[in-house]
Amino acid sequence: MINNILLKNLFLSTSSINILKTEKDKKKRSKIKSAIAGKIILFILLMFFCVSVSIGYGYIGITTAIPVLCCLVISLMEFIFTIFKTNGYLFAFKDYDMLMSLPFSVKDVVSSKFLYMYIENLPWTISISIAMEIGYGLFAKPAFYIYIIWFVLSLFIPLIPMVLASVIGTIIAAAGAKSKYKNVVQIFFTMGIIFLCVGMRFFIEGIFRDDKVEQTLNQLSDITNNIKTVYIPAKIFENAVVKFSFVDILLFILSSIVVFELAFTIISHFYRRINSRLMTTSASRKFEMKNQKSHGVVNSIAFKELKRFTGSVNYFVNAGMGQIILLVISVVVLFLDMDKILYVITNGAPVSKQMLLPAVPMVVYWLLSMMATTAVSVSLEGKNYWIIQSLPVEKKDFCNGKMLFNLWITVPFSVLGNLSLGFACGGSLLDVLLCVITGIIQCCFCTVWGMVCGLNFLKLDWQNEMEVIKQGTGTVVYLLPNMFISMGLTVLCVVLGLKFSFSAIVLITAAVYLLGAIVSYIVVMKKAENL
Image 1 (cartoon, one colour):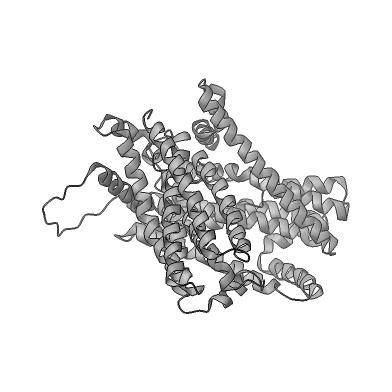
Image 2 (cartoon, rainbow, N blue to C red):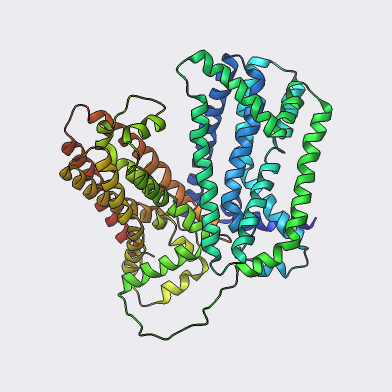
């Protein structure tokens, strides 16, 4: 009953549907409806992809592997989603003091936060489950009750991977809490897990890569069987669905519940201690008063955003991941041959470094523009936004300061990436210089485009910063068009490079992004007047 109360309050304060019921402002209602429509489209695309994959499994004769695949996809997705959210949802969240002062046990608070994450991710789980179930049904043609069992058990699939991710997140938080530089420690561990997941992608592709189709199809079945022996829940789920094993059905449900109860009983024992250390700050004993430096208004706002950026693990990891990856790539290409790297990335496709040269600015930009800080920075002011409004600062300067910070963390990496990749692809000094200039223009575009999205979809009434950083409408509206257009232009640049000169392609690319940046900046300045 207590968890129901906490869960209800969490959803009442964050649910878009609840806001839609009570909100009378037509603009806000239309924004919420657009966000819901966008999510529905994503769910449809995800279901289409999963149905296609499961049908492919059926055609090549490994229909019984579809339930295992369903379990693995859901488990991996939930694990990754939770590992990103643990620090913001379970630890150091905004209303920690208020919740802990209420007459609820620590376990009730922790489990309610976990169940909130579970329910938030449930639409993704259901979409994958139903899609895979359709594909399985087309080939296996099971009894009607198997569909019901599949659907019910799929609701329990996320529990174990989410609990595992929460435990890892707790360990990271505990390790960071003991250190004076707790944010650095947490960022280091989180980045390490992310790079491990990225590395696993190339490892798995290396297993599947083969010139012979028959051998590859045989490997599919072998790999699935090997994974079942490592990840036992996938094997239990397969037996419950394919063999209709009543014992496995009960075992799957009970094991998920037992793991959940056991993990959060242990976590709740250390919960207060970890949060107390995470939410306290340490001061140096060797403090020395020095002359204070003065900065302009725009620089001061940008510096304030830098403090927020480095002070938030979630903000840093999500907005700085592209820069870190680009830095690693820029160093790697100095020691490895670019043609060999392309062979691995493209699965042996006949793509040479000379072909990639016209697309170098696009590759660099794709990494740097994964998330612009400007898409979330204004919303992250939250309930303190009134302070900004009360200061004698023009709103245009406020927006310019936010945009300046994004340029601080993108332009240097863009220059480094274009220089490194440009020379690695065999470009001349003039070619590389054009890439650098184009990259700087692209950084300006992603900065102002992010600000357009951030101002149009302001969300100041958040309880957890992850609601803005990962789930905010501004983030989604910025990310999706930018990502798909960037991917399309990257391929287009490679194709056009076979027929046209490098200079023409890069200059046209620069002109397109410059025009977009100018138009977006004009929109931002108009929006700033009404802030």
